[in-house]
Image (cartoon, rainbow, N blue to C red):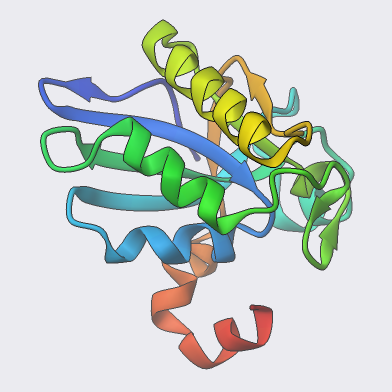
Amino acid sequence: PSVQGRVKFNNIKSCVLAGGCFWCMAKPYYEYEGIIKVYSGYCGGNEIFPTYKQVKAQQTSHKETVKLLYDSTKISYKEILKIYFDSIDPFDDEGQFIDKGESYKTAIFTDDIKELEIALKFIKDIENQCNKKVTVNLEKEKPFFMAEDYHQDFALKHPIEMEKEL
């Protein structure tokens, strides 16, 4: 199954981010008011209905991602990016932490010009502060495919196993 397209209904919006293991990416967002739902899944590839096994084995061009459904009156896109950049190593172009390979590389998926401008400014500010090149890719949003059910809300359902991942 896939969650196609962007959600935009009054103040309810969505965004898609890649930053390594989707279990780890999802975890910090559960704590913030305004985040309505966090979906784990796959984005950025050309294959239809990728599986966890395929993506983890680098057999597709997808990245593990999270799709956030949020209330923009309670949390801004800029705040979401701050959480994102606090959760990743923006200078690692090999993947994230112990997870390496194409499916674990960082990316911000968007086709919204305002979001693109916010992300570009965020990246430029980090580069200026750290005097290093940020390796987070800005990519045109592609279809988002939901990960298998057991991956959804994994950090909430399996806190002991999550501690081993961190």
